[in-house]
Image (cartoon, rainbow over all chains, first blue to last red; front, side):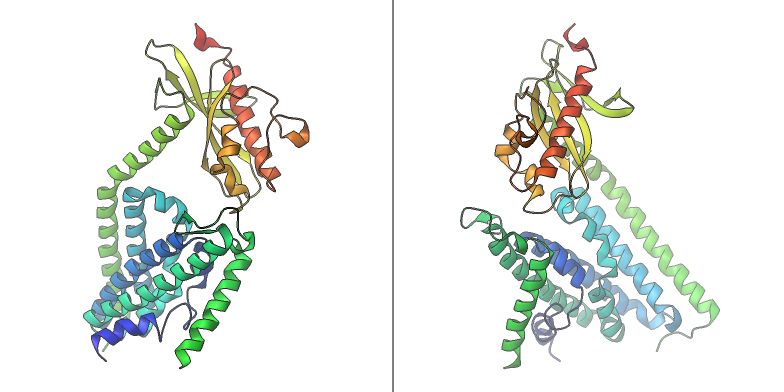
Length: 193
Length: 189
């Protein structure tokens, strides 16, 4: 498989949100605005790329029976590093996403890619897979966030599009499910062709 | 391809991975400790600047005020002459989705100077407006009326569809004012 198609695959054919339907907790919870979705996607991508690379490096020497604990320790380390860095350098972003950053540890996309891809492929391919899946996740979260922000708050990336409040339900959990469902249907219709 | 899963290999592998990971965490902690402290100090001084009058210097260490068994963190701000210009009191009150943490600037005579939400977990689009709705927040500037929303016979216009949040906010501000009044105007000496 070519290097480019490794990245493209994560964006489209194995899009983690619309096709694999993994990592739904942060997807539904953090996409109240386009910016929140984008930031959450980038944070997950950071962890995904690094953990994929390290896991592809160490997996040949990890005994089978302890591979899950080893992967989780590695993932948790990168998540904690990310958390400390965000607290230090982007405290405002950390305040919005705070709770959901530690939860990246249990995001099944990260462990899923470690198991399904990084543990069986080389460092470069694993990094590209991390970039592809991470970009797919970021894109999906940003689009969901954008739709919810336009419908729910009448704004896009924080810029007010029309006065007033919008449809409140889209800022809350039910709207998250609705938007996710419709976007998933539209996405799959075009992928099939 | 993977190493044999005998006890020795498993223990060695886990030990090695944990050792390296904790070293990385330790290093990151040391590097970020200073910037994190600075970031939270900046957040505090920004908040103090927002709720206190312009022409005074807030001290950045809190002193406790104890009133009715509750302890409030209080930051005293003094003007150029060294007189107390205002106090900033941190209060917590129960909102709709959880505690609302407020920083309230109060003049020594009990008038409200300014208010700011430090943290809250109110419903997005409804109660969460208490942190951003200027019309709601600005009515506290210089406020010295009855601490209750209009529905309860007070002088505060509640946020539409967020009466519980508004009530909690008012209660937090009132607690701060009471705490300052309990100092007995000793700042005026």
